[in-house]
Image (cartoon, rainbow, N blue to C red; front, top):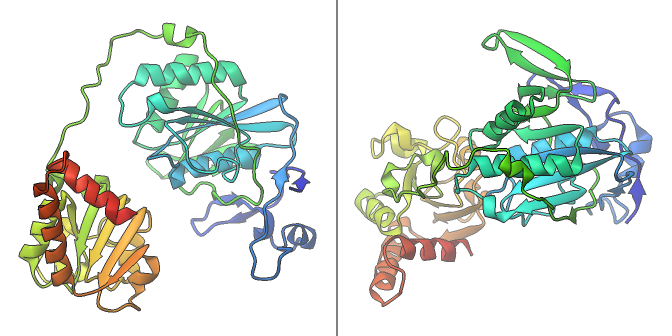
Length: 394
């Protein structure tokens, strides 16, 4: 694989649609024929160009990205935090990635040179002291110049603040603009914009950086060697993980649901749809048309004008797939469409399209799950619905 020098992070920038400054990368740069030729596809106009592996001098300087994984993958927000570190790193800087949980994503393609995985500290385990101790150990091992994390509400933002308080490190939160010299964020309830030089810990808001990179990293997996010194610096026993509680799927907010079935204008038997949801243990969603028709409450609406969801499995019954609805399911891992129209817009987004009547498909699924539960399977109830979910996602 061809190696290239790290792109200069101080090169010209563009103004994004949000009005904020963004560093331009690779072929996204305008008016630079040399760079365009460098990243041109050698296999033809329609073939994707293999991304070159960047060259860097190991052991001189390190930037550390930290994030929790979700079922083995980094979400878009975490990828952006890692990309920020990769963009700002120069030829004398390596990019390390600390993952709480397992990582099945290609770390090299995401821009990481070294990867540390800590599967025992994966979600949903609640162990803030152990997580903080592991981060301190990683900082001791790599001595990073800066730490990059997504500023989210699912653990990373809290961890970044805990670390900064523990290490007495400088920190910038809700960062929406970044380059090699400074970070920027909104202050005074969004009425003003402030900048400062790069702090020790950088917590980035979504979309502050594009996750697309024109190069790949080394992607070397390394083990975190620790003598437990960091963990001993923390008080033990202040927190207890009491596990997770099993809730009725109907009580789970759509934004948090992992398995959703959604009804559109093509669903006429609402009772059969709700029966299927109970049988599968799935949360209920609906299209705008189904909500406007009075079949579902407004809090069930999925789409740009409703809820944006990120379920592992999303089954759409009788939904054609308007642009607004597709925007609401853009982060779902597996989308299954049941529709009589094979050319409906949702079929282009779906991983699997079933060309069939919604009512007959719902009844068939309900019967199949009912038979599976009565067929002597060792897993009943919620476990049976999980098996069906995994089968649908396969």
